[in-house]
Image (tube, rainbow, N blue to C red; front, side):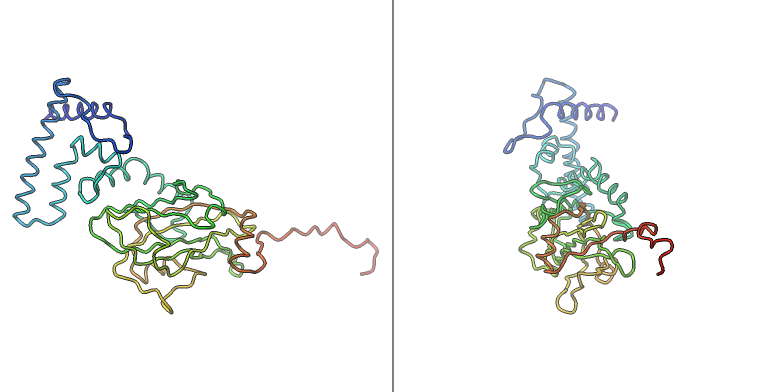
Length: 328
């Protein structure tokens, strides 16, 4: 066993140095070393092949024994996950997500290589949780593309960049098709009466079918929306706004029409999730502050004077005092 592990490590090093981490489009796999160049590498390949054949034989027996799908997929992933060509395809955009091994490798990379850690760090530090939901445990990789560029969670964007919309991509890792709701909200709208903030719904699209093989970009414009897209318009005089995209898994199809449609203003994410038995599966967000573009957006949306918020001016009681002996 010790020799086999050493051989696998040797194979991994040779593989990682033999080809670039990102191959040109249309490239095909080529073994990093020819047979006979490095005996340890040849031994590792032979060991991987023997191990795969043994697991595939076990897989066939499990199928005959009517094993459950989760067990079958686990053994199939174990059979193929160390194959150099499979690893290369997974890293170079040639993965076939209809196969369990590619779904496994993609999800593992998302969870282990830093993307999920950065997302959750910013979701926590910028108080997306618990302001919107008590907890979000992502199981889908949600990415936002603003002005043609995929952004990192929590970065600042400009109102002009999202006036016509932004793209949402979601990679889920289950083979079967499930329904999801896409929700975009701003939890930082001023509530003057209560001296706090309220949540506004900028986009609400239910009943989106997604599986691991679905196109990553969600075709928002072609899907029936309960709340059509309203561009972000952070109010003048307020701090930055966190425009948050949530991907919520449904337990059944939703009907959100007529009286069943929630209001945009004072949208309560917690109540909405609880009422419709939704499970948060993905999240991302960006931030914006007021600029002159917002005034144009406001006029276009509401055709009313744009409000201004902020602290009232401090009154200097000394300046403007009446003369000492003036009768008032």
